[in-house]
Every structure is written in structure tokens, then in C-alpha cells.
Length: 116
Length: 115
Image (tube, rainbow over all chains, first blue to last red; front, side):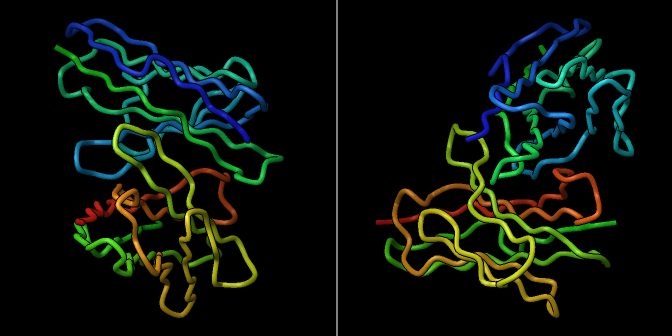
């Protein structure tokens, strides 16, 4: 089945630094990928829709200058958390639309970001 | 705007008991409905989905869900739970006309299974 690889799985960074999270579709092309954030004991919140070759579409309340999304190829989308602060600590999950697959929609394994 | 409500945040069941998790959504148009499961330390996995057709959908691991359009509900059921079903369960709704994969998730239901 369709596989989405997300890397790194865990990252700890210092306040003020930037962190890049990668999301790759391994065996299919994904023109659209999605980035979610999961707060402790809460559900997933859609942050943005990543479109290959064009600008991402951000959900209301999500700072586009803080959460930079790049979708330069059909198999890779990246989320960069810029000038990270402790409140950015969270679990970030990407997903991709497998246009031809039965599942249709596959999640990555997530990235636990801790900002200290 | 879409919204998804899961009635129980925490459910405790004995092994072999029946499970039913409620999910209601709010949306005026045609929707695609999903249930995902997240086992401890693992990523989200699709249990089942409904796009159209038979409103009773069967998924993996013995789970099923019934779409009742008049009630805007998509409840998840399993006749007899196993200890391995302990996990967090998320209901998700996507507008059928929207970018496929752009979902609203419910808050999740943590299921605990006791011996």
C-alpha cells in the first residue's frame, strides 16, 4: 500500500532555532500533502495544505511565516518551524493523497518536536 | 464550516464487551467519513471509510460503522473487543467537494480494555 515517510521522528531544538520536517511519499506521487498538528490529549488540527509547485494554503490562525511549507516535488513536502519557541512543541503529522490507491489518504508516522 | 464531535473522550471496557463510539458531524453538503486508530507509540491507521453506497461499512480488525445521514452520525462498533484494541480512535470528516484529504478530526476517544 501507499507509504508516507516522515523524518525525523523526534527532534529537540533550542529556542530561536529552526527545524525542518520532511514528508515523503515513497511509492506514489502526491500533488497534495497536508500538515497537521496534534496537541496533547487533543485531536489533530489541520495547519495547511501543501500543493506541489505552488504556495501552501494555510488554515486560519496558522502563521505562515513561522511554519514554512515547501512542496518542490511530487514526492516531498517540508515543514520548517522557524524561530521555534517552547509553545511550538507538539506532534506534527503529514499526510498525502494517494490518487490511485484504495486508501486514498495516508499518514506519516509523525514528528515529536520539543523546543527547549 | 465542518465540525466533528466524538461523544466520549474516554471509554473503559472489559475484554469481549461490545464497543460503540459515537461520532456526529456538522456539514451541509456531501461528506466522506473515516475512522482512524492510533495505537500507543504508532501513527494513525485507517480503520474504515465511507464515501457512498451501503451505509454499513466494514473495516479492518472486525470494526464496522454505520452512516445515518438523517442523524449526521457515523458510529463505530465492534461486537467483542480484544485487549489489542486499546488505542485512541478518531472520527474524521471531509467534504466530498473539497480537496480530498483535508479533514476535520474529532477530539478522539481513548479506549481502555481491561482483562
